[in-house]
Amino acid sequence: MLDLLAQPGIQSHDQWQVQIQAQTQQRADVYVFAVGLCDEEIRSALFTPVRDLPHSLLTIPILAKPDQRVDLPNNKEIPMTDYSPKPEHKFTFGLWTVGSRGADPFGSATREYRTPAELVYLLGEVGAYGVNFHDNDLIPIDATPAEAEDIKKEFRKALTDTGLVVPMATTNLFSDPIFKDGAFTSNDPRVRVYALQKMMNAIDLGVEFGAKIYVFWGGREGTETDSSKSAIESIKRSREALNFLCDYTLEKRYDLKFALEAKPNEPRADIYNPTTGHMLAFISTLDHPEMVGVNPEVAHEHMVGINFMHGVAQAWEAGKLFHIDLNDQYPGRYDQDLRFGSRDIKAAFFLVKFLEDVGYTGSRHFDAHAYRTEDFDGVKDFARGCMRTYLILKEKAAQFNADKEIQSLLAEIHADDGKMNPYFGAYTPQKAALLKAHVFDRSAIARRGLRYERLDQLTIDLLLGVRG
Ligand code: GLT
Ligand code: MN
Ligand code: MN
Image (tube, rainbow, N blue to C red; front, top):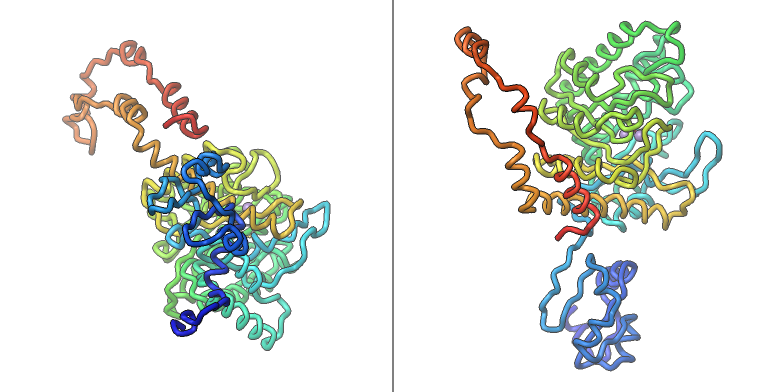
């Protein structure tokens, strides 16, 4: 290689270098200041020549955008933030997310079909860490064994070429008409048993590709009319199925944990275990609660108007936050699966701040899809946008934690002189007697202003970028 490069007039480019340059120039205009190259040579490499530093630097529009970087010839870098995704950020997408063709109940697909392997290359291009799939996102439900092998081979090659991993897999128990009345909770025993068989095969498939988390989303486990099913029987059937599949996984010695995903409605009128809180209670009744946690989704809790981060915190505190589905949603609407952070920036901020502050190390999975208006360039904009917003909010969270005024206000708000300490902690009869005798100046305590307005405005200023 070195000999090749040493030949005079060598013109062939290193493919990797060209790819990096192409990726960079998709996002930015690149200005080059070089002493040994004439303008024509710089232009032939598709860069823009710069002659009169530092005057040019001040006139280049790039400097007006604080998220871009400029490399100066003396290697001094103007410090600017880089919001590009890296593997350590653990950003993942489902095949069904970037593969969504834009169909909705009122209209057919607006984007063409892309194979699983093609979608992996797309994810590699935008900088994702991993890809997740339902059994039938990868292998169509009626594929022959030979067809399945070909698809797997192509998919595996795409994973190797891009370096993407498969941290999570799941089963489609909702698309096929056989699941019209649910899977584990169907009133038809043949459907309940078929669902178990499909699950075992899908678990095998997920494990084959390295998945360590297995998501259960029971989209059809519900009713339109409660005359049709017993709500108690449905919980018992769900429990029996989960116990069976835990034992299957244990018997196979798979290194796999289950994550249950709640949703209140859609596609059924009402779905059982409708919130993360319901799921947490249900998990504690299973035979192997230690191998089952939750996969909360922003949209699923925002659609009914509840605070998503509070549910996530409850799951985290219980040691059950195994996975998370990030997207966005207007309350009171159909399941929108909007780009992360595109609707409620403040809620997204407190969510990212929570995940980063507690040190959540699992996947940041974006379970969302591009608007129906988009082509595949728009799908890439969507995927890049999810990751970029997360990283911007992560930076804002660090800024919040380092902001002197915000932190001194918080210290004031959380001030504790320790005088009440004797009453906290476990119950004792002495403590109870002491507490009963304590006299509180209720109105003095209530008079104290808590300064939350000021704190919230500082947060808003920070989010809107007018602070520091
Ligand atoms: C479906 C659903 C999601 C679930 C997926 C996993 S499929 O798109 O709306 O919330 O996470 O089954
Ligand atoms: Mn989801
Ligand atoms: Mn959803």
